[in-house]
Image 1 (cartoon, helix red, strand yellow):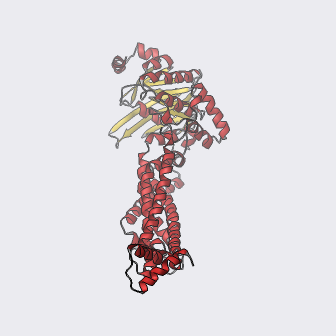
Image 2: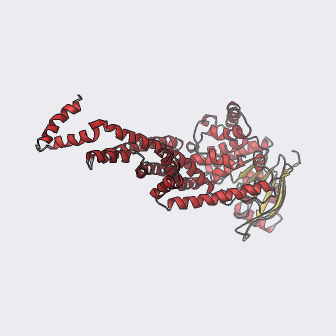
Image 3: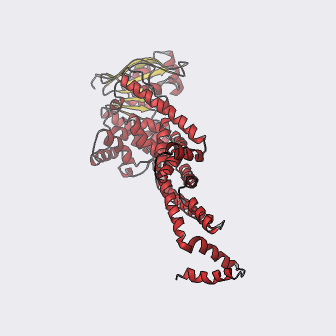
Length: 266
Length: 247
């Protein structure tokens, strides 16, 4: 018998004898019932692991797709013109223009509708008849959603880079995409980092909405414990503390990255 | 000095805002190999636009820019290949702030000339020594003075081993005490036989280093000649007025 159960026995006896509990005994009862009993702490940790998995991959999808959307919305892309006669290039420019238009449409659509609705449509609508891991649905829904916000953040970063940087790159003979990747994006990322950190934190918290489609992530895990113990506070507070832990660690990591990138401006 | 033409500009026009602003109004000029051409003129005369049209950072509205026999205004040419052979130096340096001096200089040669890191760095260090900045190879641009930045910008362009160097008011953003060090590098470059086109307000530099001076006003070349002709016996009234103001 573990020490936690030894502590629990007298309290259980008191409860059975209907003896009023002291504050400390009450507190321990909450902790025991909601965390220790039946290894319930494992429920939180499993939920945390699912939340971390979904968040990590959603951030990855959101950042990559969002950056692509941001680039597509730049004036260099929207104002791209080709006056020559090469039909392949003409078609190429037309395709780029279509994607540029689509990027704008996509951002408006995603930002203008609730995440919950998007999750429900993807879960019941698009993958309604397909057997698919809910984690993947979560990654798709949250990633696609985050991309729209990341796109605008990165676009802000891209616009803030001086036009002379592009000109310097192009004047050396670097192609447009190469200039973007080697010169513009690293500088844009640096100025967009604080806002991106914000978005990542928001995304981690918003994955809690996935409990709506029965994905057992951190919020759902807390909710499950509540359904077993009828404690209204403790399970949610435990879940909340774990979210807080994750976001604080993330903030620290990004802060460290920011300081490293700031190396170049002494 | 040889006399073959390296850049030929024909009927070059550049309009802004749907043609309401005519920055360049028909420019015809030949830039000869090994020659230093200095472009002077009042602000708004189109001299920077002209220079930027030479490597198509500004796309001309009409006209041709023929570089080493190729009309680079033709949309089907691979402009990037031709730009590798034209170095450009900007008023505001435009060094890449997130890279060290050495990385600034080796990026393009490694990506475009397919040089190895060692080769590119060797060339870069050689050039850095020429401008007395070898000890700043690992510095970031923000740690340099304006004059140092501009000298780095010049050697960064030289790392691509260009045929022509374009200078867009390279000393205009510098504190006065740093102008000299940049002009010295440019003089050294001119003496080494580099073809140069410089837009500048440094009349002393024009007089001393230029083989030819172009005076521009209202989007046209009003007068051209040797520094002696332009500065000592200008023919056009507008040239005289301008020189009276700046000298």
